[in-house]
Length: 479
Image (cartoon, rainbow, N blue to C red; front, side, top):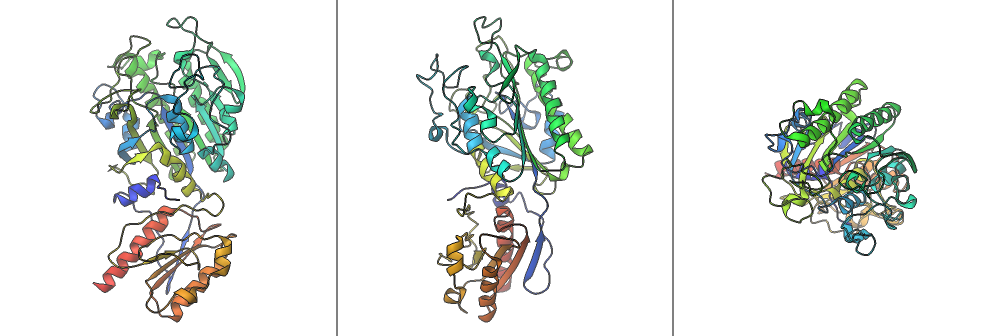
């Protein structure tokens, strides 16, 4: 299965080189892997491409978000899988195109034939779909969603059915709730897990309550890997903004809402620093779709998708091309801009790769840049592959058991990079040693790397970097 990860795209763009241990004696290299990273995904609601200072806004004040971009990588060509909430979020969580999971249209399934789910709709994200929260939970992560869900409000579709240990937030958009603009709307439910704990909460207070919920979760899980998704209510209209964020706004309620988003991030960053979690936490900041520019519900204006054409609900760039900022000190370079094409559907394979998850034996194949000479990347002694270009070879245990490197390794073979985990239970380490022995017997150029980890499915980006360095080293020798 071909796929890509966000960090892989950064690497291929020349923006990222993961740190490596120095080579040891002979042809061996040992890399000590740190514990699995914490992951925080902040997903805003209807925040446009041009709504942040680091993306060109002159109207909204976003000092914390701008600093996050300066400390990480800012993506210029990031796309959501849809231009409205439900399909955008479902595609992000599952790594699938919305049509693949039945989220391309809800005609006949809700009262208004809207392109998003409405309160009480009898459908939602099928519990059989795999989300990145389920993947991380399998890997021992504590998982939590705070904020808007909008992938089904019936019990079988709620976040706790999709890999989140706990949930606190709104199951659908606040625009569907009862208000002065919609007096016949449904009471807005604030939920904890599967229970409605409050109806018609004070929406101006929700961001602070969300931040407190996030803070408690981080505090409680500081000693184990965690996934925290904060799905902001802002800047979806109607806007209810606390006075303290309106004081310095130069863009009305919209600017105040953006300031509240910035404040929420500042609180979380401060806590991560105080707990010593900064270095081991990947933060992603984005939005579900473009701005409406002018609300169809209220008279609120102020959103910006500049310099893009279009708005929320359309498939012009302004509807689907969004900000994405990634920060992970020491792993993602600071102050970089990445123009590689990225989508929210890349989140799932990225998280899977970072945490060594794979479905059975069907590991992800990560394509590498074509070298000027032939080279081989292998993670065990199995073969029967095309060795004209670098690749990762993830065989099944059955293939590995029957592999005989001596059959295909000769003195005329291409150079070999052997990567293997020290405690792999699927493909025994002995297979890699057999490959190493075959290389040495034929005096074949090779590098033998043992990862200090449970299996060989560790950090494909790291394999990429190792392979590139290995090939460059060989190029220097032959130049």
